[in-house]
Length: 410
Image (cartoon, rainbow, N blue to C red; front, side):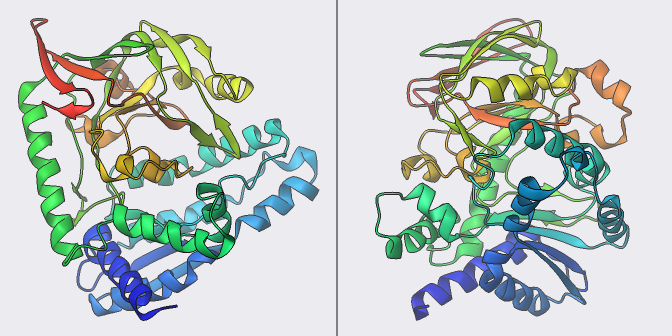
């Protein structure tokens, strides 16, 4: 490792702890990290103790171990799940731990494996871990997800580069997207979070009834939930800590009304999922529900997803991202939603977020549904924005106000 790279990696760790997690003095931290991210994880642990943490607990995982299950485990065992792991995570939340995930997965690790087993395993994991994921998404604690480069991931993003350059190119892209190369990355993130917060405040003040997306293959009306709230950038955890859950982030987002989505939406970027690339997605909504769905590649996988449960055919999120976002300007497909969703405006099939409803964390499931929120085991973001897409906000009286033109904020 060069001295320059080590310095950038250390600055990335500082941003993750102090800005992403927003670790509080005296607070404990749980770090769940891919084994390929061990060098970054070590720096994160050091930075957490420097920030005043009393205890940092780490858990490393290796997706190759999961691949062994798909290759050799009994075919009837994929509905089983180590539920005690969820119980341990819930206990960590009860004890006030902050949470940091560091992903460095190979997006194609499950390529060639039985799609039905992948479906069963992922649905089982989603169902069993739902109590934890719901508490995290409702900001039961301050939390963050970041990405770390790995050889297999880098090979996929930069297939034409010499092997010796692939990993360094991916790290360069991550550092740029996460503002690590700024003179003061922490200050740069604070300023960026403030810009997103101003955008959120403006959108919340308008109280739009719906959004209208127009572009090649897309003519989509997205009604917004009753009492919806826009969010983006930093969030406030229930313990009062300010954190930025996703690094990088360029989006502002809110909750669609599960029954008020009409028209056609066409993807503007491929979607990487379980080792497969879904391209040319085009769906039609009626009364909030997907009634037609097509994909130029990955049609069977798209259908599997839509059949997950009743909420899988409805929207749980709509997000606005300018075409000029740093991730978009790289021109890269990262094959990782943490990055790709910040390249373009997008919609998400599946579950909605409590933070995007007034008093969302205190509402029952029935109360959330009555306001228009959606519930599902999946939450799948796919991009529908580009430099060719316009977005209008529709007021309560039906007046259209321009929000985006050619992919940029008006």
